[in-house]
Image (cartoon, rainbow, N blue to C red; front, top):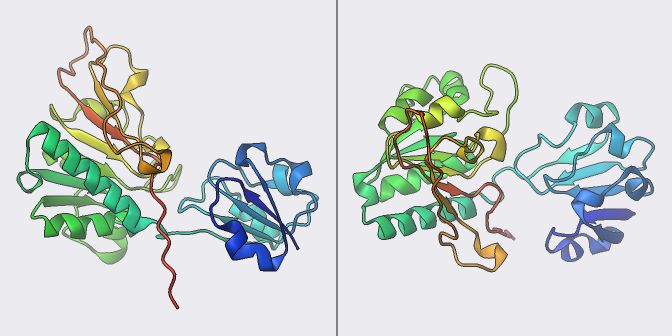
Amino acid sequence: MRILVDQNVPLAEEFFADLGEITRMPGREMTREAVRDKDILIVRSITPVNAELLEGSRVKFVGTCTIGTDHIDLDYLRDRRIAFASAPGSNADSVVDYVLSCLLMLAEEDDFALAKRTVGIVGAGNVGNRLWQRLQELDARCLVCDPPRAEAEGRTDFVDLDTLIEQADILCLHTPLVRDGDHPTHHLMDAARIESLKPGTVLINAGRGLAWITPLFVSDWRVAVTCVRCSMCGKASRPLMKRSIPWSTSPLHTLLAIAWMARCVALNWSIKH
């Protein structure tokens, strides 16, 4: 078999070499011509997998090394009987570790204790639920918003998003990217919600990037931005940039600290025998 793998997927040779011939290439450069004679395709979120890419190819299996699947046309794969697998929960503990390290870093730099802050968790799936458990062990007060789970499980201990925003000092987003249906997450944190945040609120997006609209696009907001780079990039997990954007007539008289971590997570390999 011929296997095409995104060049940034680690350990592909170790796991797949006995299945066939492995070819690597950048995910953004994968084209219909590149996949035409391949049997297996292993991608990340930067490669749209759809009819445009796969039509006329020999591909019988697509795997994505991601939790989210919004870059995959699942209906097309189903219609073409192309097998598919994603990796929900595969890096959940690593994301939680990373979020906690950023929060503890901010707590040390800004001289506050997590136990005296209210943390709002939006999305209580593989990552959010683990973060909730860990924060409780640190005696932090947590509010959780997950409407699909609340409906499916009849949860009464969850809150709605606006209540969470009103009360939380720290907001952690851990949602998939959902564009339609009863509970879309696309631009969930829109301009109005960001504007309603309390002064000094910390907003961490460790889910899909399009779950929010970054205030950097709005020129009349005063925003302090804290960019955090993960250890995968060869840098320490610390603020790399802070800058302020002056406002004119906006009612937002606040300082909003944002830790931007979308898709910057460490890899977590757990091998069970």
